[in-house]
Length: 101
Image (cartoon, rainbow, N blue to C red):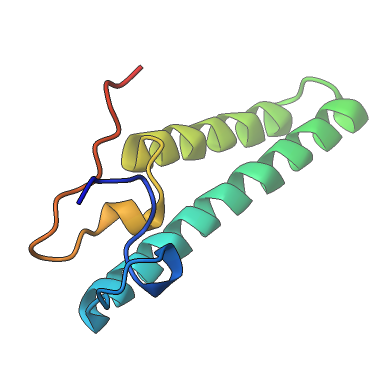
């Protein structure tokens, strides 16, 4: 079977069921990914709003710095992988994503 970038389980067309413990871990990573993404969006909106209303102030720079930190954490943790790729069921190889850019 050729590895793909799709998640494993019934939704991907793979008939092999995903064990419950692996599914729980995938859902936990998905929640972390969602929280980090929402933090980035809210930080960007808040930073833009503060920049327009107050100009370059300590608060604006603080919000931008925190948003940048959250973005760096997200990039470091996920590196372009989906939450389903973070946890691979036992006996399966992780998908080959090719060389990193």
